Length: 315
Image (tube, rainbow, N blue to C red):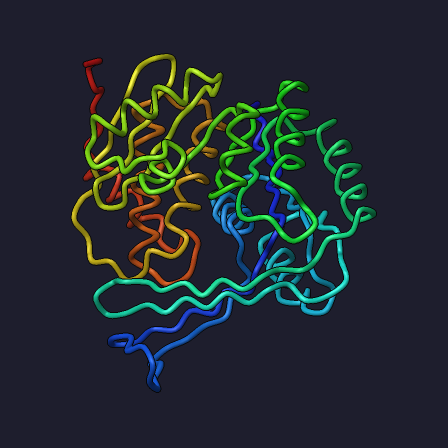
């Protein structure tokens, strides 16, 4: 029987406040037409999607003790095992302003400060979880008190223990984490450009950068390109997917949903074409809704038939 157990690590969770509006006008009063407040953070988003798909998910990381209730409620509601380390303070609130055009403005606040004792507690938790889990998803930004090098050391340790680490981050955390050669990385085209130190403006430039990245020992390089689809390099072979044209409600959590889709495909040991078609359709479904999650399985199945997947010949 396939093992559907997975651990997601969210070092800097957030309560995501999403507001829908006609158009953002800077420097003046803006009226929000719809809003919601949801527990978020990249690893938590991945956990929510995986739990709804049927995985047995354990979540860990650092959670502020002052506003932990919405998170604890979500974990209980979704049957997610809670192994978060509680730290002093409140988890941050991130504001996402979604305009009718589909444009999203993110206001990301700083998170809690993590002590050395908190770090040691998390390291003990990861060590214990590694005894019973083979798949780890480390996703999101770093709180104060965690250096990019510390993050990279955790990826290295898990990798040395034979664990499959899915990694999704940005900026200095991404650069350091990539050096630790996770099993799968999912930069978007912008993040890959930042890593490469130059703007990658077309597919061939992205393929070249992805190839360079894979040569550092990363098994799977997955590049997300929004409506342009996904590029995936594994064992020296590129596959590309193209989602159907759909009405975008919100792009919030689409990348996290793609990571969850790739993780679910790996847990099921699907072939590459099936895996990429499923993950792309799941991510496409995510942009049709405001909340992160699998709200309509029938719609997901219909979308899968509309995703075009092809192998890219080496150029």
